[in-house]
Length: 254
Image 1 (tube, rainbow, N blue to C red):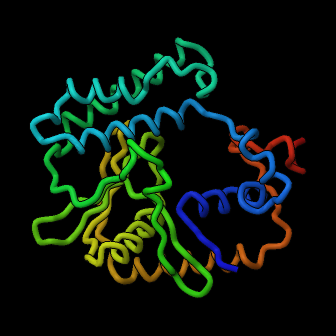
Image 2 (cartoon, one colour; image 1 turned 45 degrees about the vertical axis):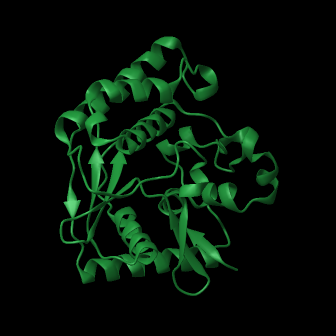
């Protein structure tokens, strides 16, 4: 059976095998999955920030300024969104809106607003599934994902940029997956990749060598083999359980 892995799928599996089963394999959950999915304020804010940045870079260079960014966020947010989007009150929604504004303001002040854009997501406007790309990656395995931005460097190579609105992470596996995707899809060398942490203003870039690429390749294959061989799908109890859409069905609920 063909298995497709993405950074989000790998993250879910590593955090909790049972959640992965509920999310992708349980035939009964699949029937009611849409009803179980809850909007979460942090995730919605993150989506609005990502969409704003995409639209910002679709503007001509002369229109990439702070007043334009404010207007884009206003249009993308199109609020108030209310409880259906996970915001418990108008006060909480205003707080998240201001967080988004602060992150975007930092970006406009500190980041290069004139990169040589090679690739941007189709959406917005459009369907986010249009931006999901997949490549073959070994026997009965595909890699998939959605890349925030790809820039062309002066030497013709590429740089991948991934925006983050949450906490900083130490794992670069997601970035390596994007390298594998981009090099296969665009047939160009990816020279560097970086996260831009919009809350902290940190933007670490890495230039992975052959050893790091090989290590990431082996890790992905190993995770895929674990998933294919999995039988028990044991839950992993942690603080993340509070954010799980399937908590009511989990055998570890107590």
